[in-house]
Length: 356
Image 1: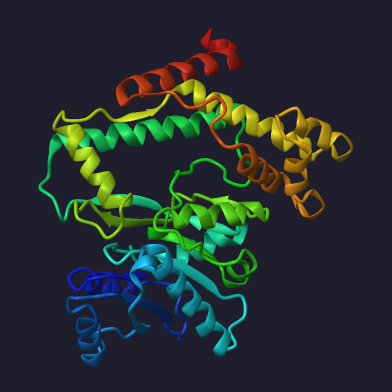
Image 2: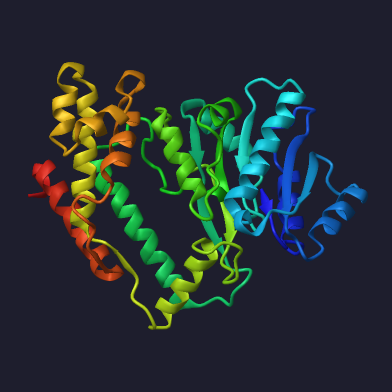
């Protein structure tokens, strides 16, 4: 994990990693912290933890680095942490090593690592569900209602996918999170996809896209979850703290929370279904893809000869033509949620005569 000025939060994360169950078998969990551009006591705090031998089940390495200002963002720091993890596994001759990414202000449940390892048996990348804790903010019923409605919205999006085109590799029940606070994948795959993209924000989603580009299955197993903070002061513009500030403004009535309408998701899911079906007919694949608006150059950029499966084809086509066709129409959360649930009820009634 990357850490910038996290002296207060890192010790509790490390203690939670030290309490992991079912994974050690005499070995120690390798933990890499990249302390980048710190101006607080992050490094000294971690050294003191190690000196007191408080961490008995993990082997901790702290890399203190100063990153130039133009590159000093979470994408660079997380890349360095994951690369250091790969190098560590290589030097020790570890085969089939696994990388897990998290954030300095997270807290891992005792089964976090073992649940990730189990989920990776049927997928190439596993995203963990984010559970918001309230350590950094006063409990606010209005904010909790916002959290609950947003969760209902994304649950409805997944239910819509279940009705229209359920993913065989990511069966229900599943959540929808695949962000850097809880990501796991094999070290060999991490190398093959080119590592973590060094973006100032969204580096995690870019890595997921790279895995899918190579045909990797992404699993959202409900057994994999991690606790994340709701603090309003973060290290990343556009990260979790930015989202928490946004939700606070919504709870105060200072801002509307806008999300894509139900028709956007229905169109997108059905388009992905049709794209995946193109892979099943290699003879007609190119003409079928051109019907989606792809030019000859676009088709050439997909590298169809090396395209391993339908997952990769969908990812490559969407990268070429963009995800939002038609463009998403943002509507207020309450309306977006109502429209989604109404659409779900209608689709279910059509598929089940007993509901008509």
